[in-house]
Length: 249
Image 1 (spheres, rainbow, N blue to C red):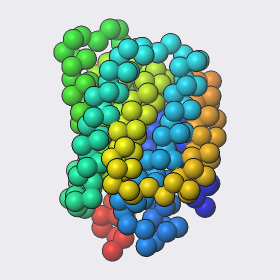
Image 2: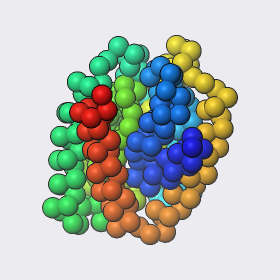
Image 3: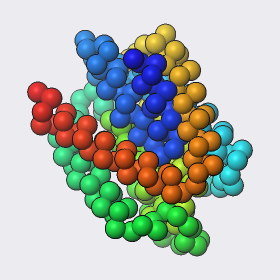
Image 4: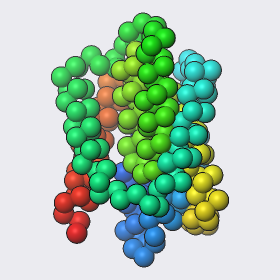
């Protein structure tokens, strides 16, 4: 079950992000006595391999501003490190309703703007670039270390909205940034000793295979395909978070 979940998570992450929606709950279901911090650490160790494979695939097949992605990723990695530090002491039940509202707003925005992310809107202004560093780098990076699921989805939306990217280029840039956030969070979880490395290595291979397939499909089918997967992922993520918040207990 964990191998299948890891492969599907890698595919979703490569296309639009949000693979943690499958992989993290799968760890908690398969290993019900595993403390949340260990699930988060093992999830990051598996995810970073698949995300790296997707990032390399995108970089080889589509033009990518590596300078921008690298700088944004560095900021996000530092923020993710901070988020992971606080992960053990945060009540996720407090944050879930806020995340659900934000995701519903994202879904409504994408539905009401059919051309959103289909074509680039020109060069972003300096103010928009700084906003991207604040939102995608600091805010979403911190969230990835703190909780994680949906990070890639949030990054894609932020990059399309703030930097005028199309969906494919936003997904490509997101992979580079997400690699950095995963490394930042994983460094903290490793320092805290909350990673099951044997299990993580097996899941990482499956995650990488799914990511390779997903990246090639996104590049081949274009922004419309990525947009469709984005909407499905957002709806599924809202359902999962709502279940955890109001029905799981």
